[in-house]
Length: 341
Figure 1 (cartoon, one colour):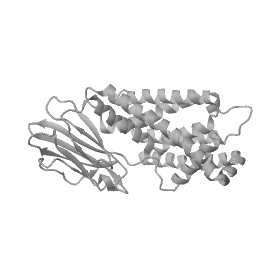
Figure 2: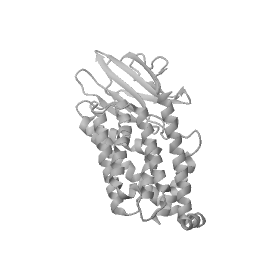
Figure 3: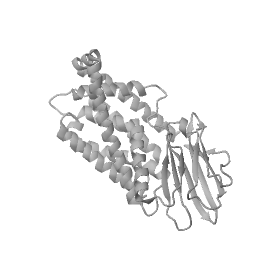
Figure 4: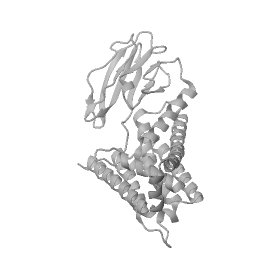
């Protein structure tokens, strides 16, 4: 039943994301930084995602007391649209409201990073479609920092289709719960290590090659799934924790990109890293639970579909493996072409 449930979920995912223009990642988050430079002046950095080669139709509006409230037209930096300016905000930012205009019509979010004054640690907050504005508090505190980075971690894993497909392919390959537990645990340890190392700058790897290898990891698992079951176990079955650990290091570098782009709060780096990593794990567990529950529900509500997959499991697995493998191979080629060309 569990295999059939996972089976149906993978089928639904591959159907949804196997179109030619599909992307493994959701839109990158927007980023607004308000850095105090002295007196009543703040240096503003505003970075918004691209959509179809154009800047997303969202705009950062500073508090009404600030002048100017918005900046000049952004320029493309290779990944997103970037602009910056100096704003004068008499009375400071505490108690004032920052708004991301148009964010309520999107599926992305914006990370806000700000300093209230000289010698103050940077604070962070996450703005979403449901909450596109923020009244800046006097001081955020550790609860606010943990909540912001925890939600960022959950959002990043749940919006990253390639990471989710990797987890689902592991579920299909490893049927016994002990090896599966070992694989998931080693994957967690590995990406926690590489996430921290990349965030502290101990490992510096450009994002495009990492993204290509992450896609390649899914292709590898799809190829493993195509190997017929027999006396000789597949590599992922013989050494599940080794495979999961190796690819977990690479996926951790992919997770680190989100943190590197938005930055870490000075003085609270360990807390932010912990919160982000816990958020990633919470999102991963949530996805697995929901996937199994939905798969079981589909098999009960649509017995004809469940019958086909349940009685033709080997053929169905091959179809899914080819679908996931073809999609991930396309991502590999697309991403390699992006940094080689």
